[in-house]
Length: 462
Image 1 (cartoon, rainbow, N blue to C red):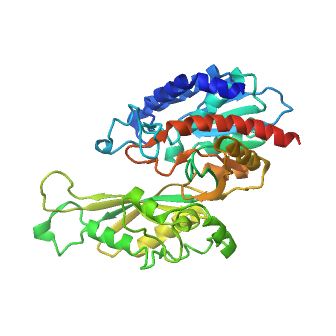
Image 2 (cartoon, helix red, strand yellow):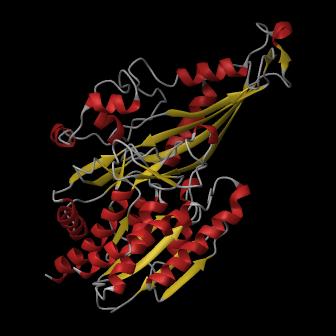
């Protein structure tokens, strides 16, 4: 068909354009990359204009802008809203990358024999949202755009999407659509395609423990004055019991428990424990007692330390008893946990377990609600049919452990279940050194998105 012919004829250009986007270090968390984040927004704007959008604008926010674009071919037709984000995670630690994180290279791997793009943001989310831009271009160039399309590509997803909610609430009419597509998740594998129907929420905290009013000599004061690092480690360790059950009072009060039948269906997804351990180079898995690995990352809440620091970490030795210790702690949440409530429970409990020898501060960075989406909607059925068309196999509905807070926002404010249409793999090293995205994934994603538009028009016309 003409659309796929256009994609095939322009593969090199489609790939090179993505590589150009990946060269922009649009790290939203670090102010030193501010100009680069704005440069990425302009790149997206220009790409949408070249692809054929009639209206494209950079919508300013108190933080980084949201790029909005649309192509309305007929107001009476169905409308598809595409969401994505052009900001990326920090690349630190740079020394653990095999190649510079913002100088993309394509290398063959065991999982990606056709090659994978190694660069920060390749899978999360530049490579995935850019598939929509190219699918849109291919449909426009082939005269085969069957539905209206709107794009909302933001620049603050990796720092909590602080300004997105206000934008969505104030622009409900502009964003009105029959279905929302998001590609910021992954599939089980290229052999077993899947569509995510559940995501965990998150509450992200930072804690500070202070002992003395200055760093002290560990010989003179060690054993007589509290060491904040030791205290912090003890406090964190006490937040889980021997079964990896979180000890914060009230933490599980609103956790939605699945039935035995639902758990059985969830565990029908293809999963090889030995292969999973081999990929991670671990001898055993770890987690809450009584649940499988699939369940632990899909339907159970967690508490994890994402970073911990304090004292002397330079070369050689320094016998110091530090004044302060810090940690960043995230909690992944499941329906029906509320991240505001969980953040408050965490703060109250953390302060309550601190010994009198130290002072503590707790800060809530950001959070988001968990979400479950329907696998019986017309949008889901269209995505299912599109994947079956391009992969030759019906996709499996799965629940994913990651968090995309805007899913619940879209459900509430726009009244629609987003379709979590991810094409990455769980081995793509998201948020880690050597993040990568398969070249084949990129192109089959473009083809599948175009197929979705055809299938969605077909199903809604019935």
